[in-house]
Amino acid sequence: MIIGLTGGIGSGKTTVANYFSEFKNVAIYIADIEAKKLMNSSQIIKEKLIKEFGEEAFLDNVLNREYISSIVFNNKDKLSSLNAIVHPEVKKHFKDFVKNNVDKLYIIYENAILFESKSNFFVTLL
Image (cartoon, rainbow, N blue to C red):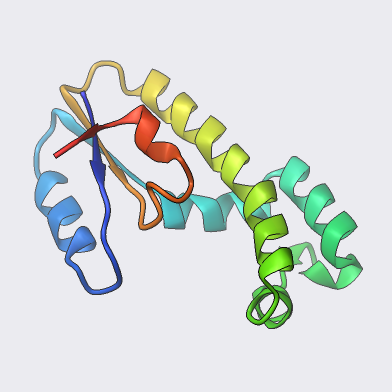
């Protein structure tokens, strides 16, 4: 069973996820952490980010978070573009995570924007 765990900043998502991490039959996927990893490791994301935001999007082959943030902070269209690049790859990564954890009784999918990213369709909401 895949359980969605969502909420705003400071709502206790990490606390709940840490509680469940003590159980051997539970796998936990923290979407924000995985998205950050993917933005540095996925060639697909890298190419699309460079195309959308320019070569400055990466410095020494590492995502230039400060540069990207400065662009998307006050520009909803650019934020939407960023999300359209990253979210589909996170969803694919999560599907692979599920396949690799079929032996677990529960998979906790922690995602602060579970509904906004339409990731709620993957989970049982409690």
